[in-house]
Length: 199
Image 1 (cartoon, rainbow, N blue to C red):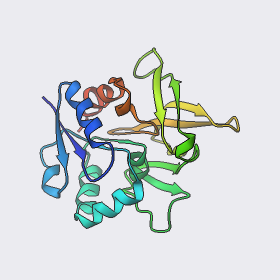
Image 2: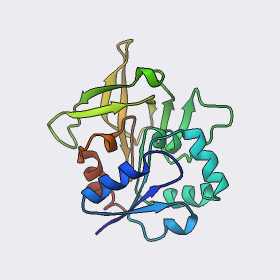
Image 3: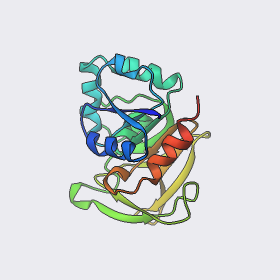
Image 4: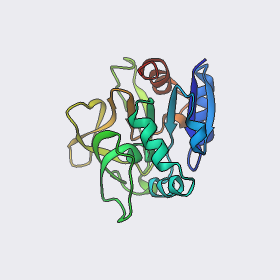
């Protein structure tokens, strides 16, 4: 059984852990550098990206985590996790830090505030031909994709422009939405079965 870590400093830790277990994998909480050993993959959950980054510093986990991910540990970041993995953040706080492991530029709170949260069906052809009900909560979107990053799903903003909300670059997967809140395991299975095989 694959061992999948969940960064357990803040955010949807329990929900991601349950999804991992429902995919017949082992969920392990990651709170210290030693917890990064012997993992097949890692999930960085939604929450508040600035807070998680500060907690990574407090727990002396920022640099070890960044090195482990840059060395190739497969990782999936949802919502705040996507922001933390991005190379660049638009509208971030003045002290915003990211792990810089995927070549994307993200815009924080791109769809609006908490009250503007919504659900929308997405087509993700690489995963399945049936629509996925995606939950967006104070969500970011991808403003710019690097040359080695592939968009797997897009959504139109109120201005009519399309923005990527699910993308992959080799062993890194990011989403604007929260699949852990839906009971639909397809995104988690894709990460565990397809991406966590890459080393």
